[in-house]
View 1 (cartoon, rainbow, N blue to C red):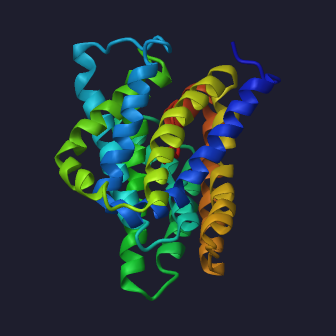
View 2 (cartoon, rainbow, N blue to C red; view 1 turned 60 degrees about the vertical axis):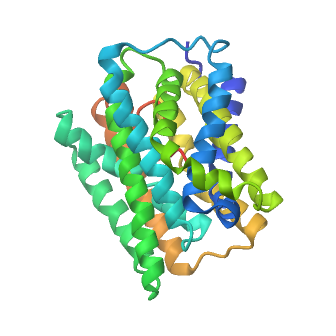
Length: 313
């Protein structure tokens, strides 16, 4: 039962926002010791083990065989590809800036839902998509450095695959809980990253302590605990209220990145980020005005990229 005045549910959403925001600077720290491949596989492996141990307590059911293709797609896009693209992008893109780019994942959810699920567009969705993507372009073009630009587009690609995850989750969410879908996707995504396990294992003995702690933090908290708190909060609030809380992720990520890493985003990055978040807000408003429950769930699913996925990280 959803209750707008449920303080525990509100606290769960607040915890989710902080955990997912903190993931962006934690990735920067983890990359220094494990690299893109090692960090990707270890983070999902830690999360998969944690969710596997908690699954019986959380009453996670086994999926049906006929749903395995969609689960594979969710894992490949929302976990495997998302981790690799985001981690590669954050080699050159500051953590706070990456969070602003990933916040555009609902834009791609809208476009994919129109193409594959037959969702009708409203003028607010069209306008919001254009505004959000223009903000991302401002960020990507804010530096004359070619490596920065390529990395920024990689992070934007991570937002796109998170949109694929949201869209592919929609049919599954009719038969499973959001937490169950997250577990299935996490486990599938880990399997796809297993070929990278040797690189991760070789990096463990020589990795700095702070990088190792970052991997454990990323796997246990943003990836595992974050999905649990998100599932608790979204089950007791409307989807509109829950997803609106995710607009705070970039702001919190910028603050955490400044306090932890000393990162200072440029003015153009901040302006582009604000434009992108404003565009996502327009999309959200269009979803509520058209078909409040169904459309909002279609755009955002029950799990965010990161993204974003919506923005899960």
